[in-house]
Length: 323
Image (tube, rainbow, N blue to C red; front, side, top):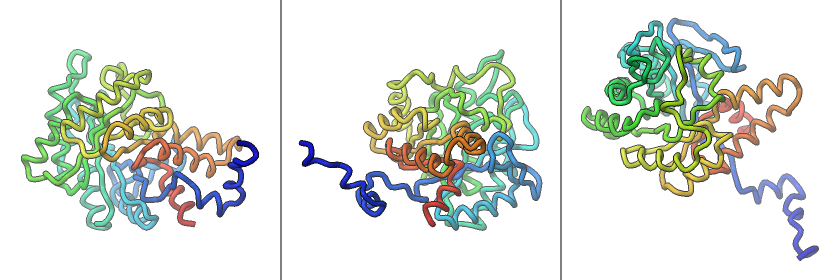
C-alpha cells in the first residue's frame, strides 16, 4: 500500500539495479552466424548487413579465433558454393565450403563449437529448400538430400547440425542417418518453429538464396500462427531434436516464451538479419542509440526464455559485456 511499497528504492543506483536484475546476458548466450564462401582472402561486405561479410575459409578461421577470444562459445556456418544446380549437390560435397571450413576451424580453434546449417536453399539453382518438380517443393525426396548433407557435415567434424529447411520428418531422417553412421553423439539443433518471415530479406542477399520463383510459405510457418509452433516443436522433439529453435526472435517473443514454458529442452532463438539491419540503419541515421537498443533487443530475447541466441550482434555485444 502506497507509500509503504516503493519499487523505485530498488532502482536508485546502477549497483542496486545490477544486484536485483532478473535477466543477465552473457557472451555464453551467443552463437555467431558466419557466411563462408569459396576463394582465398575473401572478406566481401554485405551491403544490407553492415559489419557482416561473406568470408573465405581462411578468413573464417580468423573470425573464429576472435569469436572464441570474446568468450562466445560457438558459430554457425552458412555456405555459399561456387556452383549451384537443381539438386544442390554442393551441399554434401566433402570438399564443399562448409565442410572445408568445419575442418579448418576445428583444427585452429578446437574448443569452439561449430554448428552447421543443414538446408538446400544456398546450393540449389532455384533457391528453394528442397527438390522441386513441376513448381512444387517435394517433401520426402528432399529428406534424402538433407541426410547426405548432415552426414557430410558430421564427417567433417561439425559439433552440431541444424536443419532449417522445414520439411516434415527431417529431424528423424537426419537422426537415423547420423546414428547409423556412428555419429550418435552429434546433437541436432532443429529450426523447429521457423516462420515465413519478411525479416529474412538481408540474409537472402548474404546467402544468395532468394527463390527464383514463388516463395517459401508452403513449408515455412504462417506468421499468424502461435499454437502451431508447439506442435512443430513437439514433433521435432519426438523425432530426436536436442535443441529447438524459434526463428525469427524479436517478432516472436510470445512463441519463445510458449516453447520455454511447455518443453524441457534448451531453446534457441535466431535474432535474424532484418532485425539486425533495422537497428544498424536506424543507428546510422542517428535515430537510436545503437548499443542500448542492441542490448535491449538481446535482453528481451533472453527474458522471453531463450537459452541460446543466434545473433550477428554477438561480437559487439560480447565486447560490451566484457568491458
